[in-house]
Amino acid sequence: MSITILYTRVSSVDQKTDRQRVKENEFDKVIEDKCSGAIPIFERPEGSTLKTLTDRQLIKSISVWQIDRCGRDLRDIINFIHYTTERGIPVNFLSQGLCTLNENKEAIKKIGSFGKYAALTAIGTYVLLSPQKAQASSPEAPGSGF
Image (cartoon, rainbow, N blue to C red; front, top):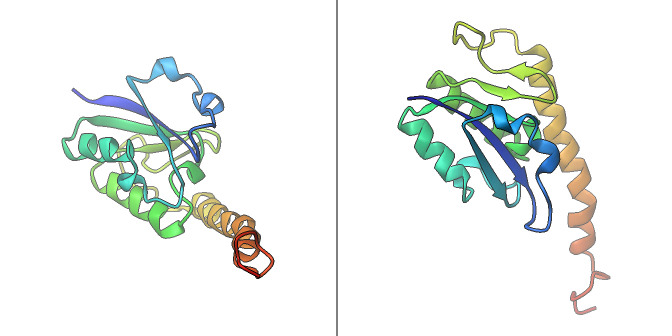
């Protein structure tokens, strides 16, 4: 028996996944992580469940609200997509209307907008986080001892 999965992720336990749970009643199972997107998807607390189900060939498809829920690092996102594609599991990015496999379970050959979106997501996350990292490491940062 193959099941359909809706995967959601937020960065902290205080945040809610409500806006990512689009048509959740159409899925057999919802898997939710509340952790940093910097952690590779299969190393996350519930992402490991996703990997186990994938390895046991129990998943028909995985849906995610948007690609950045899969990771902050472009390499991690690509690794996740490669892993699922090699196993014939389509990953649907709901808000972008993108899917990694076509109806014949063939990998998308022309990833044009998909690849561009993944790259822009990773770059955008880097740009947003860079000032935070710089501020945290500055001598004026709280707890820096200066």
